[in-house]
Length: 469
Image 1 (tube, rainbow, N blue to C red):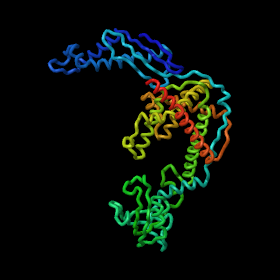
Image 2: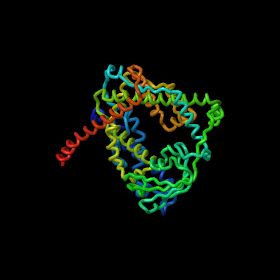
Image 3: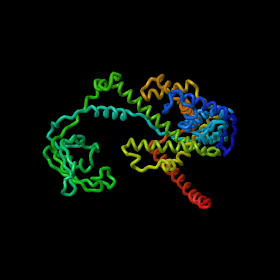
Image 4: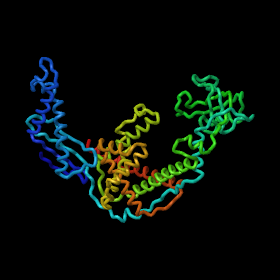
């Protein structure tokens, strides 16, 4: 095997691998022998088909399998020989292997850029942490919310009109003008006032009603409302109040706590669990806010070219995640007419920012000699297992079997590097709402800057295209 490397840029390499003809012939011979045992061709007994006949029927298939086998056997060895570590999915280029000829394949791949960062640029960063603290009021509100879930509806005992918090049982019919809407009626519909389950106009009409009352509500629907029959129309609802019910909440005592699970021995234990979960959630928000600020501040440190394939893969993954979110929200990405290539192009600026920050973070990890020990990996797996409610041993086995340990190591390395940067940072506690507003404004500024940059580049690209043509 002969291997040589061409440097296309500071981060891009072209790997040329040449496999001798005898290896090609040997691989093809083995494939044809295997094929001979299973091939079924009219006029020949099983296992007795001559190779010349097999080649007539299966030459393209064997050529493809030969290429796959030769590349699979040689690629890792070729990388080791020239000491290259690809940062992303490489691009392979080759012609189908031919008997009696050397097989040559080329691999275009990105490697990690080489640069240094002055530690003064990432140590002592000024960070803002949202001042999130668990309060007794918040715990009480969570307990009340749990009680709401166990509430039962009972007929209203008092002789009074419906009020916010009540459940009004109605029959209704909807109209556009004087014409009743097809499918626009229902009986015994429960509307909880104040919950936003129906349009505000309907809730307002039902407040202060009593059983037997007939009321009307008019609702103007937006042009883009999800139901085309209602979109852009003024719809009139006639509502007959059948019954008014009140919510009966359980007593907030030890029995209530035990009804939520055997692990809650008392109301105190329930509140302790709620407090603990809130603490974890708030810590996660704090870490996320600090990490986001760190990445924003270190992103532009260091001079280096971005690996194109890494950006491409990141943009494509962002595009696919976006389509998945659309699907989960009930929208069919195919019906939305989303083009994969254009969608990936739209996400490219974000992908470039993420890739750049990741590379800088990796360089800082090297300079700070950050390592992921087995203890670190086990702790990280245990943390994920707790979140998923699975045994850590089962999760570890899954990561190992599915070759996911490298990704796990990368996660741990990133988290430890961010922790190291936070340890040297100057952290100020601030109001969460103010920080959220500031973060949103900065994100908008970055997006505008990226768009301006793309707009500036567009005429240049057009001019180049015109010149080339």
